[in-house]
Image (spheres, rainbow, N blue to C red):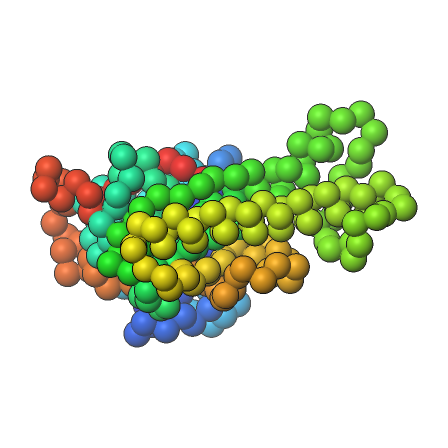
Length: 283
């Protein structure tokens, strides 16, 4: 079995794969203060609940945009699974050519999403990840990671309204059903949810045009959305073609298959390979 960790600023999503198929997945809160033993106990309980055996885990792979949690999970992997984790970063084979000015600045989650989307859907793509930040990534049909856009996520925007105003309350992120609202809660929900839909619709429209110009193609890119709030935003706009909640975990499994044979050797980065190597500290 393969145990995959996708560590975001808000949540850690775990998945267990057997023979390339996802067996189960869980979502935990990202907590910088938790130790490897605390996370180890939680993961152990989850395994027992699903009837899984830690000794059946053959490898562990980690993608994280929270550097402070990386050491914790590496220690967890070594202590509780007796495995040296594969970490998404410089030297990892992805099959992508990264066209970012500095490939090492691209968040590992964005690369993992791009790998999975290209493998599953093919062609030119726009991948939207609705996480703590909302990220938009453009990938050509030739598997080139071209770049993208980063916007504040829905939760960040909601927290900012609550923290930076004297009277506005915290609200649930729900579709209020209308934009002319007669109470404060619905008014905030309307601004947050519909405002984010507008941001997504506008950025996707401009990104499609730029990607088609880059590819010199008349064929519109497919738009793939992932992340916890993808379904909410997709419900009110037409620009998203597929919502794929498990995209990042599946990308980790795909990258694992590309790298498992060379796991025991230390990765080396050469100047010739700079466009294919990356490591990131993004969103």
